[in-house]
Length: 165
Image (cartoon, rainbow, N blue to C red):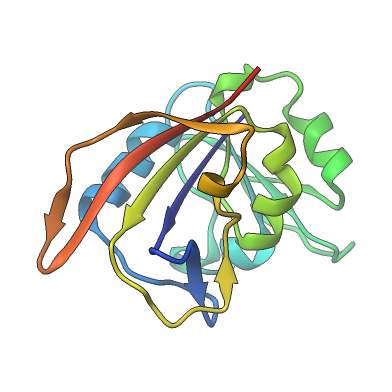
């Protein structure tokens, strides 16, 4: 299983239910990486609510994790536990499944992921949601980095982490 996330220099990912920043090339990378035939995204209900119209993402299977037993959304698989989510994605190829947030979902599923696509933004934002710092976790190693890129005055790069065997 994969995960995909954008973090600031403190590994923050959000504030007050919103992304810290929207960088067009990061959004494009996210779309290209997670959409297409057989691709699946796992996300929490609160993350779903941040999408346009609160609708599931197009061109991929959406697995929404919520504690609310009455929650339903057209065009998505709704589950109520991590175990149910893992069961729901069993029929899909492991490398086509992406955990996309929010912070609680990332933390729950990190042990099941082998590959992390991390957009690292060289800025510290005010934040209330964080991702675990993979640089401090010995089981993860950097296996690829893009050149540093700039969006207005923001510097960022795409970093690929893989779990060591």
